[in-house]
Image (cartoon, rainbow, N blue to C red; front, side, top):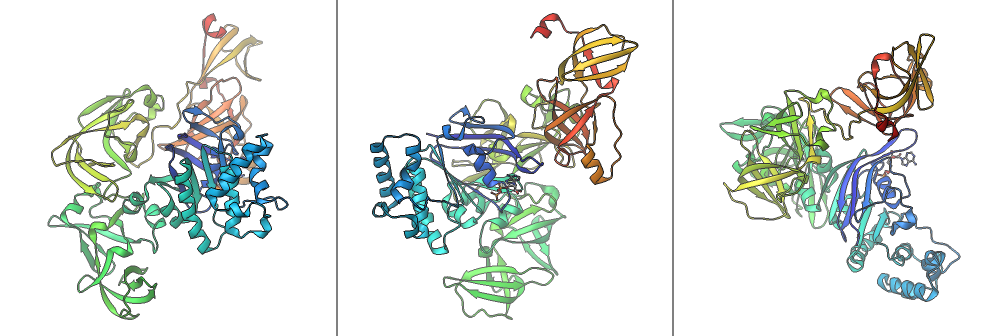
Length: 627
Ligand code: ADP
């Protein structure tokens, strides 16, 4: 049994490389999850944090409900299989497989049983007495898997295990690993940069880019309903055609115009799926997969550029007037299509995609976020004729500057449930229509007071027009943004910045001892003694470190009352940067708000300085100090 939960996980390597950001994922027992994305996107780092080989900078990792951030790798009951499987050359297969158990002092009879059992599962029983050099690449990889199996782990982590094998063997090992997963019935997490591996192996795929999860879904959902252009073009071969087009609406018919006077229109049902009506009249990114275009008698005029016959299908690269790139079409094998021919392309518009030009997010079909216009005042959010008194978990992450009239409330679509749950905002709607995918049903509902649709993906279910429906949005899946789409709510709790200090006055100077530092001010006219000190987040100043200042030609002025700070995280919010820093003398981190220019990732070490107006001294009761 192994359920896993990664909650707001971050990895920042020393030197400031931010490899993984805000990684949230729940993995079910016995699930086969694949992390996929281009090289450097943070897949291996995430896997290594799960294994315990890499420290988690921020966030939590739970295995079966137990937080394991600080649990030693050997105590996590996880086995990892790497790309470089490094077998011991002088040992036989049997010894290679049993070696780890021997180190753990497992009795010889038990080792024998487990090695033979694993060898049988992997079909290498007759190779047990061979040495690695007498094995093929595929056989060696099987031994490496065997070494993991004998440990009987709760979770298998596989990091590009097949990338050293040739193409044919890779395909074969792919299906063997799928079978192995079924047979062992344990949780598998598999890392690859190969989209075909991801699509064929995973129950669920996590698509990553630049350290962020882009989308987590089943292969079918990712393929049919990609949340943005990156996911749309990363999965599928040949990849989805994407090009700029203008979204038009004429006589109530939604369509696109593109290139030199080309146009296509959406059917009525598809047109209704446009979640963001403000896109009409704007340039959008239009996407259509090669298999959703056919050559026909009417449609968009094109000239065949290149033809590739792959046996079962033909790939046709065409030029359309006014478009820079080829439009690629895949059709059943057809040898009569040759370069230079004039053809007409017919788009299956029901299978087309529309993405916002700026954010590159999908705006037709199931959006990544459902949005409401909203106002926040005195800790209450007003949206769609309703008011919502923000719960502590939300309020504690809001700065004063988030309180304003024109705010967007964004709800992460994939976290919205149709079942009542705790710590959720309930939103009521009425079903208008549904769209049925290969493995889900998208429900489009109207919410009173909201112009567009509220959309969720349901695994299954019967929904009809007019049905009343309730959506449950976890508080953690709700963010507030300003009208420019900049987040206003922090991922971290905004700390109250209270620490302890000792105050003494002599010769007209007040000295404040805070941690190891002593700050000095003109006489503050306070009694000597112990105090609580509360820092005002927007009054704290930072000083550049020398190295950064020199490199960037910034003049450093030595501040008088400065304290060493080390950054824990930052969060860019509405033109400001909320920085979470450890400061000696404060138990919790300190939250400081600097301007947007500042980034702890550009300058991980710095000092903060405290002017006399940047803090308050609070005379505590003796009890509070004792605590
Ligand atoms: P992937 O597995 O997706 O190729 P990685 O997780 O290996 O990506 O790397 C993510 C980012 O972190 C990359 O920018 C990489 O250069 C950086 N990185 C990885 N390991 C280290 C390290 N030990 N120290 C500093 N940066 C690292």
